[in-house]
Amino acid sequence: MSSIPVPKNVHNPLHLTRGEREKARAEIIINTLPSGTFFAMNFLASVIAGYGLLQDSPAVVIGAMLVAHAAYPLLVSAGLLLIVLLFDLTKPRPTPAA
Image (cartoon, rainbow, N blue to C red; front, side):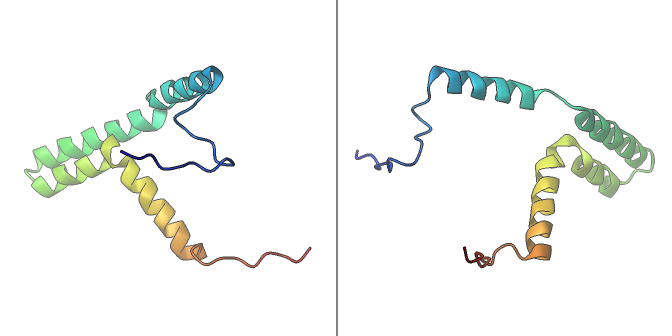
């Protein structure tokens, strides 16, 4: 199996120094801790699901699943898509002349 050569000016993520590994590990631990948003979205999802169960409405229960923390990556992706579409970030911008 041949490996893909990495250009000299590109940092190879497979070869990290001890400090870089410790920094990455610390960032992963910090980013995996539950936040206030996590608890707020789960509380809201619980309230919506409870209402859906009381009303015997499967659509509302499914809607509660969309509010739950599992939908957070979808919300972020939708927000990024909206920004790209609104500001048309796909087109290259002209660089100012020096």
